[in-house]
Length: 373
Image 1 (tube, rainbow, N blue to C red):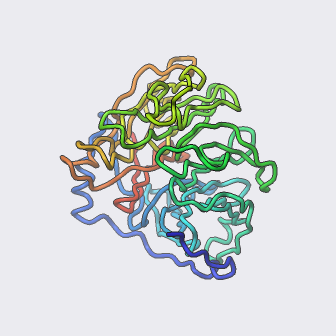
Image 2 (cartoon, rainbow, N blue to C red):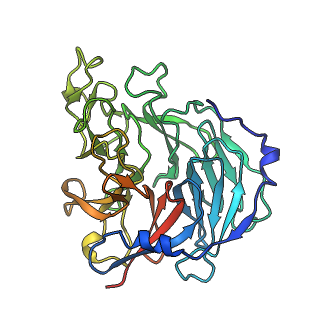
Image 3 (cartoon, helix red, strand yellow):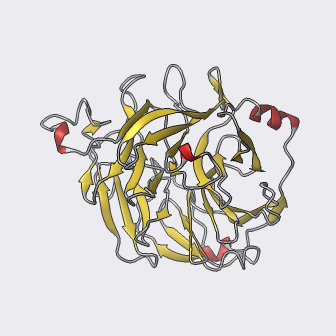
């Protein structure tokens, strides 16, 4: 069922703020289940952030949160104590505004079918500015419709369009792609094809190459195919969907007459069905040096596997050149207890102090991971 879109004029007044609550005993008990390497701690940055998904930070340190619901939030931390002062609703009635990005003082918000821009967002946070429509030609399809957005080193806004199915020949070439456009909405172009569903990407701090996660198809068994971590060696490559997954797993119906060698192979195979999402290079200085320029990946967790896996933050280590992966390991886990989850990590954001925020759309929270030594 499609969500009913509200007129832009109606959206602006629907904003309010409420004070961020202190963690309850039950919430603290859940956090105590999270296992981290020695010296790291996790705390609540904000609670009551319903369906928290992508994160972005403004120049003043305010954190913006997209959701799979209908709202976009702001989390100011004016006293810089590592916890949001309040949860401010910027807009409501949107069409799954998963994606958020900040550029030149403006907040960009990606709904399923369009991209909005809120100018001077930090100064007008509670005055509820009327958004401008930047781009309105995205397909309005719910299946793999959550848009992750980010500005690249080239100044362009990158946005994926996932496949409208589990596995199929897309009826339009826009599906199964990563695209970019200018900040004003002009110059839309496709830079990668054959991408089933990426909800997370980032650029290498070493050579500026784009890396992205991609979720493998379902219904091929518990252990196949693996999710993917990809490195884009250049624009225009095809990453296999819907013919091959994880580089060498053929689609039973669609791979006939195709060769896996035709398509770009993943830089690293991840766990099968872990639902790898908002990957991030760590470039801060708070964590120990061995974590710098390495890739952290929130794994949202499997939904159709006999024994659940994921529900954690993994770490992919790279060699000194930043092009080859050397290991894939757990950094933080504990959101899954037995076969029951109490949280699902979605997106990562590095704050200016080098701490790492983690959104959770099951526990409606944003956590802060810091290193105390």
